[in-house]
Length: 180
Image 1 (cartoon, rainbow, N blue to C red):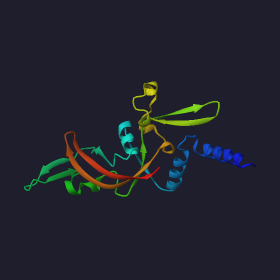
Image 2 (cartoon, one colour; image 1 turned 180 degrees about the vertical axis):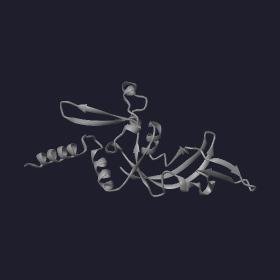
Image 3 (cartoon, rainbow, N blue to C red; image 1 turned 135 degrees about the vertical axis):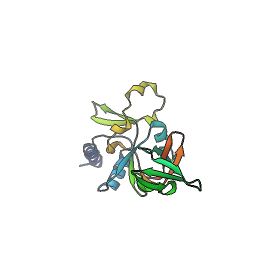
């Protein structure tokens, strides 16, 4: 077998294993192999958030607390939050967060899959790379439907706090990229 034939066979094995082939295949393959055997949850970003994340401009995300806690003020003006009949100071409420510090989350984003019938390859197209492209505007799938194998990166939660916004109480998660 020549060296070129070996490359074709290796590529075919990767395509068979992951079910698709993209120009980011090597990064995705490395990220997936680094996470094998690790229980990893996901987090969804819209196209603008995903673009900022991949460009390195985003290191924090906010999620509305659901259900909202009830709130009372102390004499010192500090917020006391009540959730499930338990009392928390706003500064200590992070213990109830759905994510924990150190937890790894794979990033979901709007996407769709294309298939080349002639070459039997599949490619994933990401909305964050195609914002404003009207040719594909109606093709985007929800981030919630994205399989983990198509995720382009993984984040690790580095900090959690609770803040009050106009829309209600939110979890504020600081994170760093750890994959692809």
